[in-house]
Image 1 (cartoon, helix red, strand yellow):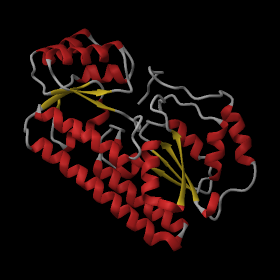
Image 2 (tube, rainbow, N blue to C red):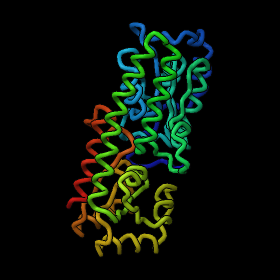
Image 3 (cartoon, rainbow, N blue to C red):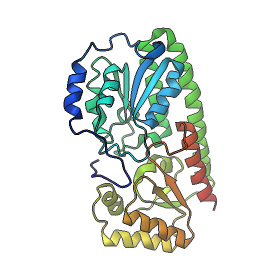
Length: 303
């Protein structure tokens, strides 16, 4: 999926970074043993802090995690890599990107780590759905955790059992989130919502909540083009008539149109559930972040 720059967002530094990165990639040898990093830890690199959190959960004290995007204002679609990013990639024993067109910058970055295990969450998930926001698919997250554990175990066999155990612990928490989400939806069957952008597509799918947003509206927001008047009118009608239970709002994509939808929901007395694409300020890991989002969705359904 292609996007132009968005607001509020942080655009990466240094247009010459790619040229410098090639130089950096040629410096020194590749990481052939995987035993890099301070204190014997494995250097692992993720495109965003969402996947960095998963690497931390599975790798535990055996890994040193670098998340290239770790700022809630940064946009993976338009991020430009820095020399520091290139250095991190060069040392990596394993890289984990989202894929699916979400973080194309990371594919080029991972290429600078020729000896690293290169994982792509979207490919591992294999949802059969073109929606790339697979971190909202709990089943997909569990698959990625298993693959990370397996690959880290190949890099460092002596810790393979620990990686598997860490993954099992993490997956149990993810499974609990899935159950909670399913129960929230089951308690309110047939519910519909409007989404300012289909970021939480898989979360709504798990809860069996219908996204009633007109396709033309969603596509226009994602492509940063003008929303067709008819689509916007339909959204406003659904909200004003309270034909939907809530508005699910991507808080990291703020446009005049999405703000209007949020304002309309508040005016109509409908709850607004904010979701994000990376860890928001104050969130420390995937589980705590996703728990707060599931709780917010559940609260909206109960209102």
